[in-house]
Each structure stands twice: as structure tokens, then as C-alpha cells.
Length: 203
Image 1 (cartoon, one colour):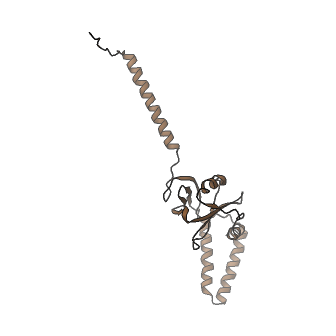
Image 2 (image 1 turned 180 degrees about the vertical axis):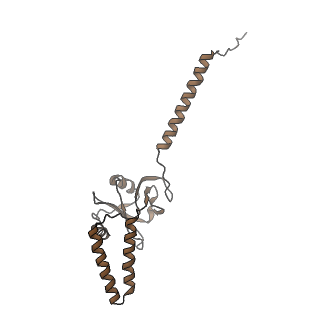
Image 3 (image 1 turned 90 degrees about the vertical axis):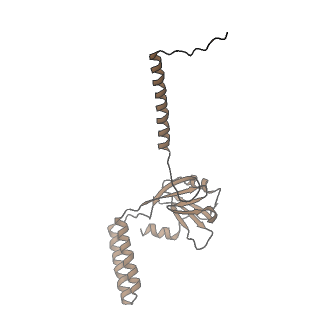
């Protein structure tokens, strides 16, 4: 005659200890999962693809201008406006005046931070997505602390070249992620003339 199986009987103290330990382990595992979820950065970039390198930049270059700079530029602006009025070139006078107003507004307003990302399919700048198929080549000009830029040119001639500040991003990481998809322009070793003028004259 087969013996009937008897389940082990736990005492009340052992049952409470077992339930308590199981609850503790469950709470610990849940907390660790929540911590891992919170520490993982979540980036929502425009366009398809998985983000590989992501950093933030100012929406426009932030310049630190001295009082002397303002005095010189104000005198130059007044001289240009007087000259344009004297030569009946009123459109140029309006352009100079608007440029001065925009410069003052930009000084009193801090630029917004926008996200730059290199994904598995393209380059994202804010809400703009550039597919790798439209990119001709890229170049890294790294001369810290003044110059730390990523330059991107496109196959279409009507698309202007992009100059993207790297800020604290490692240029070697950026190069590593771009090389499988884009050609690197090794001939470009310095910043563009526009960038030089903007940096030197704080425009």
C-alpha cells in the first residue's frame, strides 16, 4: 500500500519569518528595478533610430560683451544709419537698426538648451532630423577651450554646412559613432571664417 505524501507543517513563527523574508526580497528587487529605471537616461529624439551620443547645446552662441564693445558698436551703428539716410538707402538703415535691437534682446535673454543626438540612422538637432544618406562628410575641429566644433556638410548644395558645438562631449566618441555612416573630411582642420569673426568680434 502506497504511503500518502504529507506536506511539511510549518510552525507559526517559521511561517511568519518565511513570508517576511519573501516580502523583503520582493521589495528589494522592486526597488532595485526602479532605481535602474530611474538612472537610465531617456531621450526622445526626432526621427527614427536609436540614440548613440546625446548632448545639449545653446540655441544660439552666448557672447560675453564688455561695456566698451557696446560703445564701439553703438557708435558704428549710428554712423551707418546716418550714412544710409544721407545716401537715401533707408532699407539698410532699417537693417542696421533691427540688428542692434536683436543683439540687445539676445543679451537680456538666455538661450534655450536644445538636444543634439547621433543615432543609428542620422543626426538630430532639436526638432530637425538629418538622415545619414543626405550627409556628405563631417569634420571635427578640436582646439579647446575656444574651438570644439563638429562640422557637417550635405550632398545637396543648397543645404548650408552645420557647425555644432561639442561642449564637453568627447570628440573621439563622436568620430567613432559617425565613421560607420559618414566620410570624415581630414582637410578641414580649422573653424570657418564666419565662426572666427563671430568669436573674435563677439557677434
